[in-house]
Length: 150
Image 1 (cartoon, helix red, strand yellow):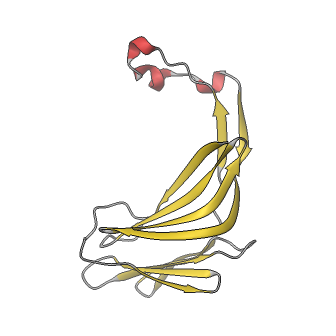
Image 2: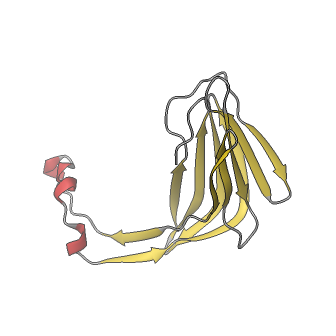
Image 3: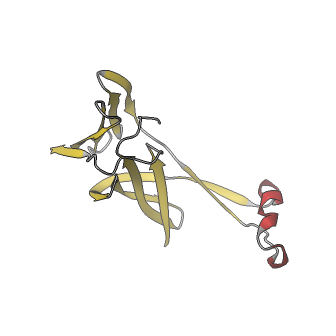
């Protein structure tokens, strides 16, 4: 089986290394709170219960931005034609849809979750994803000190 990593980048600007995200686990929910500025915070609540939407809510300050989000993915497998003489630059002109390909629905089983913090960001890794001959985990990255943007 090939490894598949899907990265869901929630916040994408350089963060403040001195701010720290906080996490709270309550049964099957994971609550993350992080600084979005000098005096503001954002919160994301993930629901790890089977058959529940993954993202229970995302809020900034007292304003709820979204609730009940359940991401879905499609993996498309095909072949590319890359000429060694081009150094890989012909990838921009590769007519992938003109060649045979197959699309697969990515299945998401919330079987495990792992949190890691490194400097100004926190990574939530949730497994497992699988489609065709690929498998891997979903990664959500939170950068401290940045505005909430999805």
